[in-house]
Length: 205
Length: 230
Image (cartoon, one colour):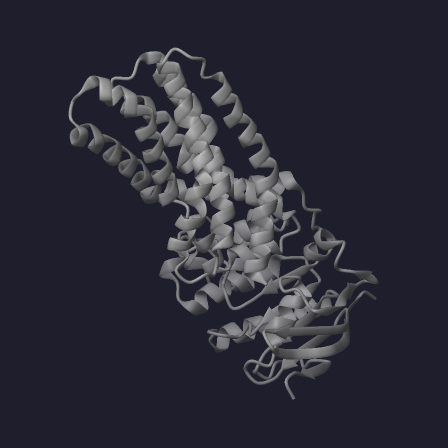
């Protein structure tokens, strides 16, 4: 069983210390919910784990190896989805999806891409440039990407934002599938999610 | 079941280069703006200073270089800012590829969409200044060596100003002084040719600058992007 371990992570922004000596572990098939009021450091924690933000102290360990020092290997195993959609306004849903997968070195055939777009409800709009899509539809491109990426670690920041009921149901299905195939998740959300998290981590208490 | 591949410099370079060239091709507005600016400003000088062939021949290389430099500068703010704003920059930073790979790919694509058209057009523009054919060739050579260096320097400055308020003005203050050596050796090459000296020292220095820049500046871009994303 591989595990993502966070060891004694400390991070401050300006003068405020967001969290100090934070340690936890998530193993395959589990997901951990990050909760806490706005500004409590959920996003910063996710960015620290992903390697975008630099913590003051502590380390992130994946499968027994510190993520620092083997960044390439670690990043290939991790998907981070933040507040920004990470798609180009000028490109269509299909192109954005192909670009995002190609950037991560993931190869998928046309049928798999078409199926993921159909599952995300973007079948009829897959050739429209993203600027013609709503915020929720852009989020759905991100969901299609999650469905196709074999990475085992999901670090997601408010993944349900802007999604309608059907989109939220789709996300739950994807999460279930992800956990069933041995994936794990670290998800900041204000929503009650099913399947239920193994643990909740409360920040800023 | 692990279908992910290890990231490589070349794969990152290819990905960023192909995507940026595709974006520039699909929305040629920015490239056309750079070209139009270059042609317009370079054509204003002969109108402004009068049709004295001797004077035009003397100022020609310098004026064309300044115009090319300003035109290249016009396209700089977009090089990383758009990717930063829509979140693709953080996805690139999180890709398994080394940062220097895709950063170099983006810089190369930027040159294709700004420096290269300017280089190709420059002999045509220089005809207005009555430059001799051999000076035209030297001018184009100098631009071919100098404009990639402008893209490299500009990218490093553009990455440094990410997320800063009033980034455009800051970018001008940062980048334009760094362009000065490129301008001096670039314009110097065609001038040397026109006065009967060999342009090769100037061109060699530009080439050396380009090699050093291509080795060192992508690393500077990476450091600046890391700071911007932190």
